[in-house]
Image (cartoon, helix red, strand yellow):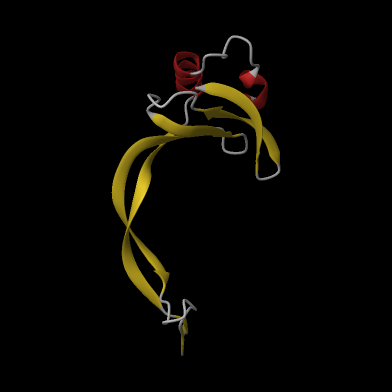
Length: 109
């Protein structure tokens, strides 16, 4: 993976992006507000979500209590939330090829 500058909501941060097909992760992004590194893996899991129920024209159906919803199974990527500073640094140093040249620690203050 490679470290790049990015933004999350209104804050500047860093992202980890894959540079080869063999990378086990889709992306990683550091949230400077909560100080958490979120890693999104290629592992797919099934998750249940409530979604708007649509009519034959693809428009949300409205009922007496608001938008009608239906429970659907959705394939999503597994996410990992790393909270400890030492663990974040270790993961970045293991997976990012430019961790020695990119000042990612400046976003972790």
